[in-house]
Length: 441
Image: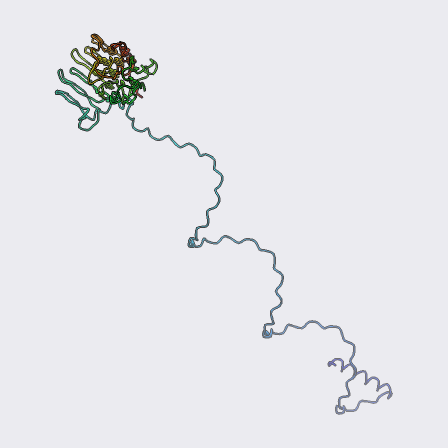
């Protein structure tokens, strides 16, 4: 019980006692304070008094145990980007990913500067002139000893009058300037002649003999056929000449290659004598001139007893002019005559076919000759005379070229006598009034 409650209880008790005693007299002196009575029951709680002034803040108590972590709050707004840190070390290369789709074609870049102009096609046709000027003033054989560097590309070519230059079949001479042939160019053959071989030790039989070496074909693939041989049983026929070329293939012939006329056949064991004529091409940016007395020969060669070789092929081409006041020939060789010797009788040889010559230039002047005739047939005048052996051999066939080779003659009758062979067919000369450059590009 607080002080106010105790005071209120004391006053109430005093009033009660006064009523019981009646009117009191004058007050005596205050007696001594008696002992405190027992505490009365608590009175009703009075109304809350006004809040007193706050006392001084006491010292902080000990920190209590941490409470349970509350639920995460909502994510706050992204803060400002901090400064970039230092680059870390490069990690290991990962595996290559699949190839992506092809991207769109980019824009065309700017055109580059124009390159230097290349050499013209004509330069390749007429050579570089690397071998310089060549002057033939003595007998010279390029077939055995070619020019020092082996390159037939000259600035100018001159064969002096009275001198001969021998070249192999398939030669191509190129010149950036002029070519003058006042002397002679002779082209060797490439197609060897063939021969028939027979054995007289089997005399008396009538079986044909076919042991023979074939002649080499002409440039068009045609081959002279061998003549048959029999024993003591006429008649026997001569060999069949090689077939000539059709005009069409020759009209497109500008670089004929290695082989010209075909070889002829010799029935007297003389293999390789009747060679076909070779091929020669001269290409010049300047003029080509064969003056009077000058000559180019691509002729076939013959044999005294067999078929003649076919004529060769010669092409002269210039961007300026071609002049022939001398001779440019590709003739077939004549056939050999019939004969008797060593117990063998043979017929007359057929003539070789005529070859082919071509002039190509804006200006072509020919006041000289261009013979391309076929070779004559071997003569049978006078007969065979006495035949002392058993072997009768037909005449050798002529090799082909542009013109076909002639057939060999046979042997017939009693006593045996030769029958006529045939001449080789003529060749051809073709002139193109044109710049030859497009033909060789």
